[in-house]
Length: 434
Image (tube, rainbow, N blue to C red; front, side, top):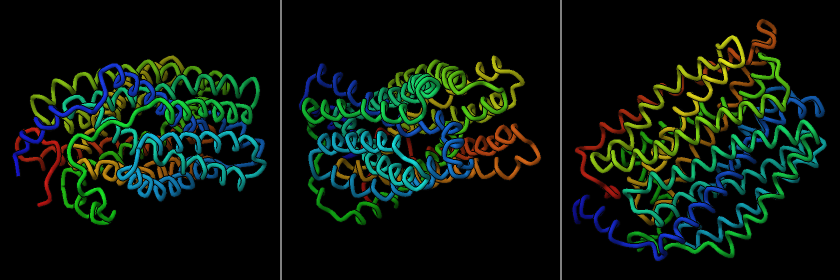
């Protein structure tokens, strides 16, 4: 077997079957996919308060809708969709996934009870389960390993825009037309994007052989889980997701309750602050990674370690700020830190996956993130808020959200262990089975 450096050189020499212009177009389309993926997923944070009032829900109910109910379906659907994508035309599966979650988001706007809302939310989860594994896998073939982190950072920038600009738009629509109209508008806007993917996005040629693409899913799972760097990066991303999903869902309700902003004000200011910091951070981090990873591939783990350490106290300052201007200023810096290496940390997964296991490797990470991060994070934060509300009143959410901040520090420790588990700094496109 050739050395790791030879493998990386071989991958760099191969092209994806499309030119630079089409690669740029594909990244733009995938960034839009990420935009609607995160906007539709996190829209509950904007509509949470009016939704609770109309349907008589608790914080724990909202946490279940955004967390555990969504996450269980998302996690279960993700692995079979990823295996299907590894064996078929990925962009077609992606287009169908966008169509499913868009229709399901629109149907949520017609719900009249928690049960109906939960069923529609499950439909959103099924569609969105294919977004990250397929998109990352496609980017891995459009971009060389040396530039892959930049491509995934651009994809993540689209998601941050969805969380930021999407929050602003959702807050305006909710304030003027109600939460039902907001859900239906966001859902229907995704349908043209699905058609764009199905009819204009080419399938890139794979970088590297896919001769083992027919292997059983459990064979791929066992092979990947044998690799210490892979396991540690998955665990680190999961702890980071536990913190970030909790904060993303509950930060707007926190501003409404503790700082007495309206839904429109909280959504607009939070969206602007998150966009200013997050988009800048993820693009700078992705660009910086291109140079750093050339010097030592362990920067794929060191960068997210550094940003995770910075994120914990910065988000703590957001929650403990005495006034809105201070809290929003801290939110800009916190978003910058959290976004700074998000694309890099996700790209690092592919450094330890063969091409024919790429979507599967990402899906395993998404499974863990869905159950423990997206699933438990928002629910635990909401449940803690419910428990301590009799003592702290409207400020209960402020103190409850300090708990997930500590998860950033756990993530940093795991990234450090992952970097230490990689012997030397030689470039590696994938790790052989040992």
